[in-house]
Every structure is written in C-alpha cells, then in structure tokens.
Length: 327
Length: 198
Figure: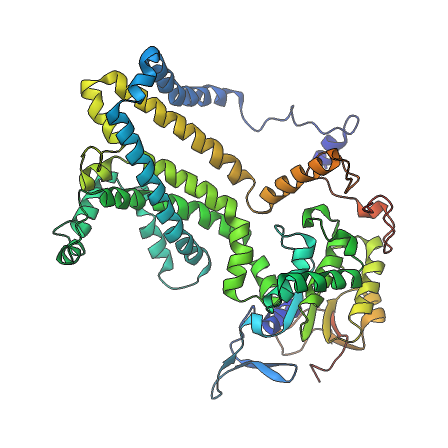
C-alpha cells in the first residue's frame, strides 16, 4: 500500500507536513473570515478611552448593570443546569415516539430571534398570558421584573447546555452504565456515580456557554423584562442605552463583555476536548508528576500523562513486574 | 452473532419478544402470550457481564472500581474497600489498587475487571470472549486467573479459543449452523458450571 510506504519512509519518523488535505488557495478566504471576526474587535480596542476606562467601568449605572447581569446570569445558568441535564439525558437516551420532534422544538430558541422569544414569553408569563394570569391571581407578577430577566435568559440559553451535553452523552454511549447495572447499580446509582462524573466536563462547558449566552441576552430581555435600572437593565441593555448618550461608557462596557466572552471560550474549549475520561487522565497525569517530583515513584514513566506501561515486553506472572512494583 | 445477543438477554440489556430465562432457580424473564409477564431489571438479576474490553470506569481508581459492586450492595465505604483489596489480590492485581484505568495495560485492566465482577458477588458470571482483546502472550496468565477464581462459580464463557475450552470448561455448548433456527454462527459457547442451563 502506498500509505504504508509513506509511513515507513525515512528513518521511521512519521511526518505529515508534506501531505496537504487543504488546497493552498483556501487560505485566502480562511484568512478573510478570520479577519472579519477579529477586525471589529480591533476597531473597538482602538476606540477605548483607556485613561478613563476604570472610571467608566465603575460608574454607578455600570456597576448596577454589571451586578444585575452577573446575578441573573448565574441564576439562569443554574436553572439551565438543573433543567437542562435531565432534558439532555432524556433526549439522548430515552427511546420514545415523538421525542425527535420534541428535540427540535426544544432547540428552537437556538435559531429563534430573541425578540420573538421575548414576545412568546410575554404572552405566556406576562399579565395577560395564560400562565401569567393564573400567577397574577396568586399575587405573583413576573413580567418586567428581575424574574423576567432570569426567565428570558434561561429560555435562550437552555438549548446551549442541552446540545453540548446531549452530544457528550451520545458519544459516551451506555456501555459503562451496562457494566454498572451488572454490578448491581440501580439506574439512579449509575447516573450519580457513572454518568454524571463522566460527562461533568461537558456539563461544565455547556454551563459556560449558557452563562455567556445569558450574559449577552438582549432581545428577549428587552421585550419581556423591559429596561429598568437595577431591576431589569442588564449590561447589554445598559450598553445599548449608553451608546446614545455616552459612547465611551458603552465601549468600556463592551470591552468588559468581550473579556468575559474570551474567558468563557477559554474555559469551555479545553473542557470539550478532554471530555469524560480525558479530564481525569489529565488530572491523574498531573498528580503523578507531582508524585515523581516528591520522590515517591509510582511508575517508571516519563512525564507524559498518556503513556501506558507496555505489558507485551514484560513477564506477566503475579508480582513479576520489576519495573512496575511500587516501592 | 447469536452468542452475544444471548448474553445481553440474560444480563437484561435486551428484551426478547417472548421467552423465558431462569437464573439461579428464579425467572428473570418470562415474556409471551398468555403468561404473566416477568421482567427483572438488569441490576437485580445478579448477572455480571464481562466483555472483551475491561471497561473499567475511567474516573474511578482501580480500588474504587472494584469497590463499586459492594457499594451498590449497600456496604460502607471502608468495608467495600477492604473487600475490593481482597478481590484484587485474588485476581493478582492488588498492586494496581491506587492507579487509574488509563495507567494499566490490557492484561492488567482485565485482571481488575475480573476482580470487579467477583466483588459484586453475582449469581452468574457471563464472559464474552474475555481474552480475545489481549495480546497472545498475556492470555495464558489471565486464563489461569480465570480458572482459579471461577472454580466454584457459575459462569458462562463465549470463546473461539480451543485453549479456553480445554482449561476452563466443564461443559461445552457448540453453536453451529442450525437448519431452521436463526443462529447461523459457527462458534462455541461453553459452560464452566452448567447448573444454570441444566
């Protein structure tokens, strides 16, 4: 085979550098795409009023909006986790007629314009909505309150968590749960001790994405919750408002949101890569290195966290791994 | 592939349209027309299935993996760990107790998987080609372990390896081409202690 020849060519070192699956000209539109995303950020950075940045960020209205944004986004993210994890489990693992349709409907807020979401929420939980009317009778008013902000954010952010967790659950399969059942674990025990720990990184990255989406929520919030300082005016609403009167403040707050977004992407991207076992292996690899450096040699391994002992070259009798014994 | 399907049905991972399965003298499946429907969920059957791959829980240490079964039975953390250590040494794997599965070779992991199955104290152990994923040189050793720990247990093993048959089996069932049946695989299943399927 040509491929085998290619692999063994040279001194055995496999190099992929010469084989390209990407035509050279693709680099041009790719670069344009990257620039299109990055240039507006540069444009914003160039307009930031650096000397007064701190003052702009710590003005009373900014701090109020920031505090409200963080508070509501945290509660909404929590709601997303509490409601989204069971939903993702059901969508990924329960086989029921009609579940596919439910799945696409539940993911609708991903593609729905947020304003439309806000309208829908308003005519459900608002004073005249069919749920809101009942709540109103009980003396609970949701629309144009901080609760409305949380509902709007949860509505738009929930699909993010569901999608990423459902994907992880499907990739993971159910083999470990099958083993657990054979060992006597009820479905609840298996979920608690096997499923959730294994998809914890996916839950974390899904929650991070949801948090970012909550923080950026604008359309549904404005429609369903309005823009009252300290009550419903979150950071994006504050930015939109300031844009008219104090562009410098708007830019400063925008910068803040960009930084949060960068932090979230940094947090969720590696978590997605080392989903499930990978996360723990990274952790135990790190711990092992710490052990080696403290003089306690557990294994005759290099510092790489993913190296395995090679059994094939060793005798397999009990207690006969001279290199592997824990001294 | 009829053999693995049979195992999945016995273990409670697949439901047959109709039929009856008895494990250790009690019905776990009895499905079909005109019968009272019986379906024991997988975790209450006392049937542990071991596949080709060890499938150790990657986020738990070797010790916690083996202690999983006792914990599910309601044993305390300490008692479970003690039992786990005993079973690990039974399978010749006690020195791996503090490692994580990804630090084990195939043969080491399979030893741990054996210890984990035994620690759950199942009524019936199902082994689906337990040695076939291992390096040829690692097989005799694991086979010896299996022979030792399965000695007084009810176990059913699927294998293609005549050595397994020679060393492990009390009773052999060959699944071959059946004229009018649905199993058309040429393969062997063998019963280490044939009590269950008498």
